[in-house]
Length: 433
Image (tube, rainbow, N blue to C red; front, side, top):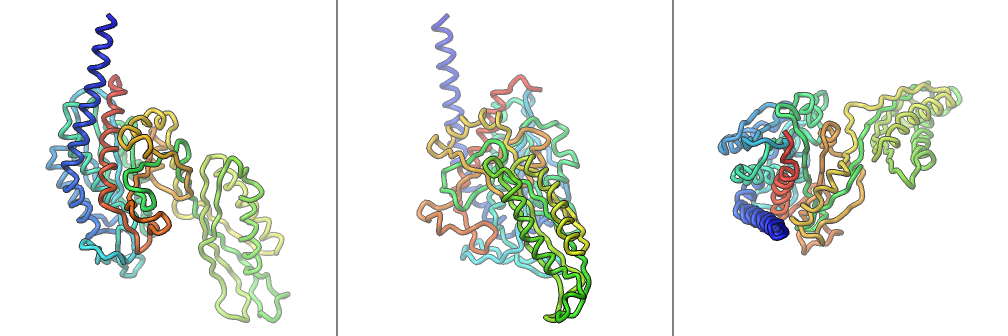
């Protein structure tokens, strides 16, 4: 009996090593194609909710794999399903598609020279956040998993999502709309994985964080109504500018004096102030626009309670009136990595990238609308390194800048992770239906 169990264990280990070897070989074989896809997407970026040609390019390839493809989800989204024909879980993999209104200043053979209309103006367009790599990596994983269909148990849903950077003014888009339109249904998704390339992390490394990984984002607007007067006679006014100044400072005290900073993190930033048009006129109105970032539910709820209290209290003390709109035009939940799922898949990360290259990282106050999927099903969102090893972190360009750059070599680990996470999750949940 012992020998039989030992034989089965050795067979299982050998089978696992064989599968890993097969994945590694397939990832290496498809890498030139992944790079070609990435260069195409980078050269021809499209803005949020305008990814029409990008969607056609993706859907054409997915159809060539024999997958069931749906287009036009949340305007330009593409969704494909791979059915193994065997019972098992439904694993979703997601990539975002949109570029940004940023002029590219990196001298590349596949540099973007595209322009588009945004907010009534003609603007340059660039993949300044790496979404070009995300699409290419997911297409690579789709090819490998399709070729390994006989090893799968269940279904894989490939989600190519528009408008992660936010829909144009007056429009809806992104993950929130995809969820509303049933992207996690028919077949019902059990788990979702996503990743983001990072220009400040070394190629070959992957970063993860259980729990709140990226912040909720809640934009807001405050309109302060005062009483206009000559600047020489301020006592005849109700000064909305002075009121706004007090409000900007007081809002910071929510973070410094009300948030339990040893446990929680929060940010309140004012990004825009508009009021007045002349040096000697105290205006009637001032408008403030800003953003709130929080990393857990308690801090977020506190912000929603404290913001109206502070705004009203300061306006009342100055004899002014103030209207707070919160959230303003959109709102993202916390990107929350399910702790149990994260722990379960950690061995996959360590086996794929290597234990020394699998880094537990701190949460960040940036936001990601991948969070809308995680509100519905357990999800894991990862950061994959794209920084060349000969570039220091200090010298690596920031995301959303004209100098943004990530190396093609970083995509190889991303393709491996998407593939292995799918295979391992299916193997661990073969009884799911």
